[in-house]
Amino acid sequence: MKSQLTSDKFAMSFSAICLVHCLFAPSLIILSYSSLALTIESELIHKVILLLTIPVSIFAISLGYKNHSNNSIIYTGIAGLTILISALLIGENIGENAELILTMIGSLLVIYCHYRNYITCKEVNCDCHEA
Image 1 (cartoon, rainbow, N blue to C red):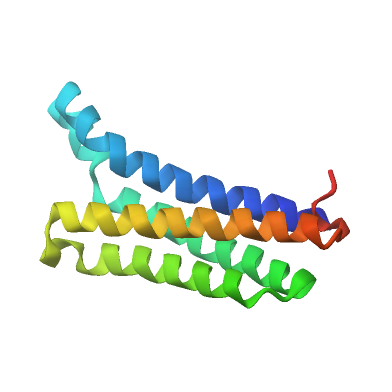
Image 2 (image 1 turned 180 degrees about the vertical axis):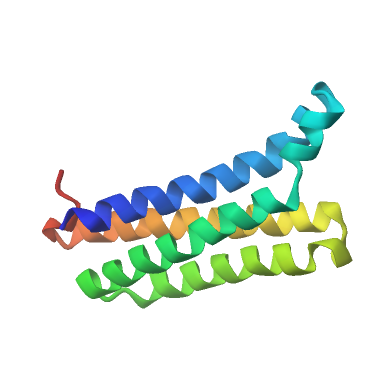
């Protein structure tokens, strides 16, 4: 079942993109022209990345649970996604640094969740991650 491997990889990639964006966008803004800065730091980018991450993560986590029934993976994934959504929704009210910290924590939890999903699948020798 290759969809499990593909969805885990996509979900980890989207979370990593979110993390990289949060870590390096300020540097790019300083080094770039002001018109580029507005594009890079736009809230639309945050929303698009999150809207891609949520369905792919839910799909991958659901498939993983179906294959190996590990509740801790679900709880970690839900916590990560909840933190990412919260950072986007309340980010303006809590300040830029707090939003950055929440986004990094949420992204790392989602990445960890999908990594654990992959490792757990390997440990129980299911064929869902075979290439």
